[in-house]
Length: 185
Image: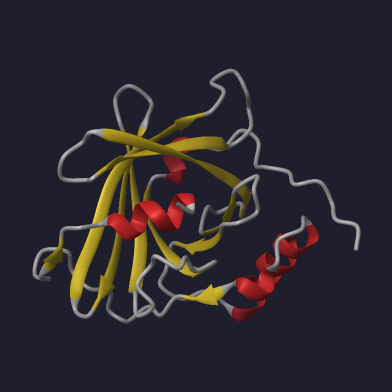
């Protein structure tokens, strides 16, 4: 089946993109906890124009998280092709690991987004709320399929209401699965 060329969002409003995003579905990684729930990302704009990234998930009642930074792959381009950098291990920043983060689609209200990579090995459907309307979800799946993603690999991420608070949850400080899940290592 012929696929459309993968396009990315142009002129992404970085400030509007900041804040919390809930993972509605993703391509699971063999290194990600199979029982991971309430997975989310929080983006904060830094004064130098880069973005602070906090990825969190809960597994076995414990919060796993990793922090990193994102920046435009080509500062002169109007395309939303970002690089995300984390350090391995997260508690001892020695080795930077960098991956692609392409915003393939975002709605006009910046309330849901489709994120991919040129390799098409990773795909995320994100929403500002823990749940996304099924019709919108299906539209995003269709968009991913049209540009060649194997959407049969997409797995919905369980989200609870209310979402867990960060402060009162035991921490899993290893965070290694995030690195492996994002970059396929």
